[in-house]
Amino acid sequence: METVLGIESSCDETAAAVVRGDRVILAEHIASQDEVHLPYGGVVPEIAARAHAEKLTPLIEATLADAGMTLADVDAIAATAGPGLIGGVMVGLVTAKALAMASDKPLIAINHLEGHALSPRLAEPALEFPYLLLLVSGGHCQLLLVEGAGKYRRLATTIDDALGEAFDKTAKLLGLGYPGGPAVEKLAMQGDPKAVPLPRPLLNSADPHFSFSGLKSAVMRAKQSGDYGDADIAASFQQAAIDCLIDRTKRAIAASGSVASGPVTALVVAGGVAANRAIRAALETLAHGNGLPFAAPPLALCTDNAAMIAWAGIERLRMGQSDLLDIAARPRWPLDPDAAPARGAGVKA
Ligand SMILES: Nc1ncnc2c1ncn2[C@@H]1O[C@H](COP(=O)(O)OP(=O)(O)OP(=O)(O)O)[C@@H](O)[C@H]1O
Ligand SMILES: [Mg+2]
Image 1: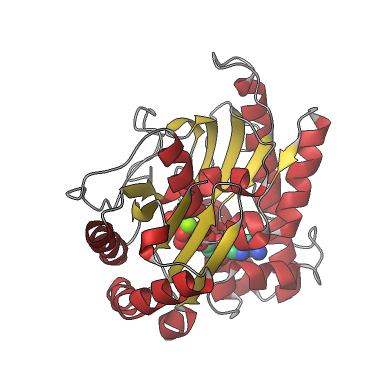
Image 2: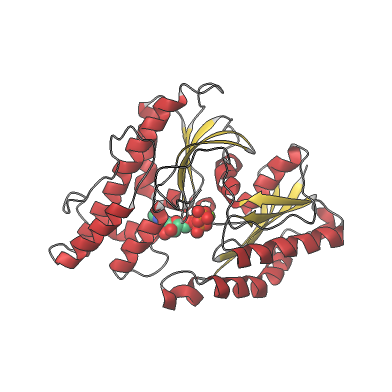
């Protein structure tokens, strides 16, 4: 059975994992850089790249040792090749190329977003294509029809901010530190989701896309007004975000019924924001209300990790795919290159 070493370094987690084709994660290590970026309130690309360069090699050695393996025992080396902070991506990809060359094993260059998109299949053997995926992370908010590895149709994206970014900015505003998502979720549990009147951008819009910048600004005004407690702001922000996600996903479920690849097998959520329990619960209710199974990876597989990269490598390997050693790192790499640009300038793919 195939065994793949996965490497992730696209943002502020340095990670390595060894995953087997029967979905067993034989070993994994993640080194978070939270502390080095904390004084800046966000990830500093140059500092991130240097930290990846320092930590990655010992991390890979420790991961292989934990799995009781050497490079000779793995069938391929999979590394994130984009999208992300280019310095960090280059560290991971160049390391993977060197290991592939030294061990004469195939290199598989993985789109980080494909790692997130296929991560629910690592956790859930029964999850079949095509499924409807809500990909919500630090840099992206998209609804995608996942028809297979490498086969994505983007139904919606954000015209401004990603939801993870909005969680992080809300956290910063409330003095909760970075990364902000988990802290906002925790504080929201003590607040009243109806206390602060906040907008729900694009609610009921015929346009399929997301928008979170107006919500972010409204959160800032609510805080500056001094009229509301922080827990109420956190709870009201989270509820507004959930209402937007549910409205847009409901629309996509209806739209997915008319696509050529046939009815979707499940509603699936992935990406860092998918670790939010309130969001998971709301999506599960929506899925079941529409007669669809719901799937979400365990929390540790939602935020950046190398097991999902190794798993995407296994799916690619099964399709007979690998990459040449001259493949370049990519700062931008949309899952669906044919998607029409969304309204609004400078949006992320
Ligand atoms: N429990 C949570 N609730 C809400 N948001 C969360 C939670 N846990 C993590 N997040 C958010 O998830 C984001 C990190 O997700 P992830 O690691 O997938 O993003 P990224 O890799 O930086 O971006 P991308 O995958 O788009 O390149 C952060 O914005 C973080 O605040
Ligand atoms: Mg990510």
